[in-house]
Amino acid sequence: MKERFDLLVFDWDGTLFDSIGWIVESLQYAARECGLPVPSDPVARSVIGLGLHEAMESLYPGASSELALRVAQSYRRYYGSRLAAMSLFEGMHEMLTELKARGYRLAVATGKARAGLDHALRATGTEGLFHATRCADETASKPDPTMLLQLMGELRVTPERTLMIGDSVHDLRMAQNAGVCAVGVGCGANGMSELTEFNPVVCLRTTAELLSLLS
Image 1 (cartoon, rainbow, N blue to C red):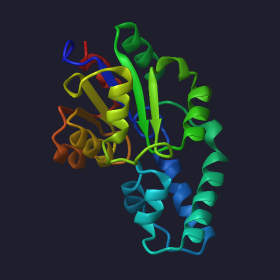
Image 2 (image 1 turned 180 degrees about the vertical axis):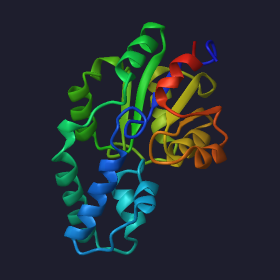
Image 3 (image 1 turned 180 degrees about the horizontal axis):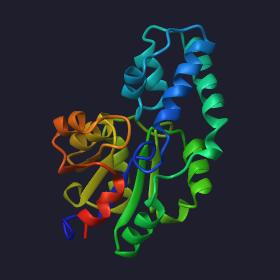
Image 4 (image 1 turned 135 degrees about the vertical axis):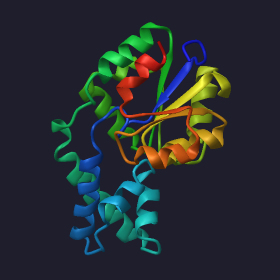
């Protein structure tokens, strides 16, 4: 695979950033605070990767826009309360630095809001490693292919030269919808058995294994 791709597009939460457990807890806290049914761990994991608005619609279909906004605000407040204690998965900064040095163009496609991603990039010292980023509050949410299509257009890379790396079925569905190859990583929202149903090029246990795959 060394010469096959020019653009590597990463999901953020659960792929580069070790945050899945905290996202689940934050969704459950917000539900309790707002008097709504508390999603189980698997149900909460099932919406990770979607934009927050789409996640609320999936968890609480038919809820009023006012209630959905209250839940989203509660989630953001609780999630942000421990953000400083979270970090990239081990080896991620070194991996991204090496991939960029090899000439790959790097991008992020995430269900996070722009403010949240920008904060995370600054906190992890990775903002200078990516050539472009897209967030769910500035374009269509996964699994719509628009994020990938916009990134490929901006960086002038064709679908056949683009690789999506993600930990959720929403990442892999988005890649399929955009006509892009994908690598699944089993360190986040969905297990490897779920990810392999979407025919990734390969499914890795951790994102760090990507460096060897591309060597």
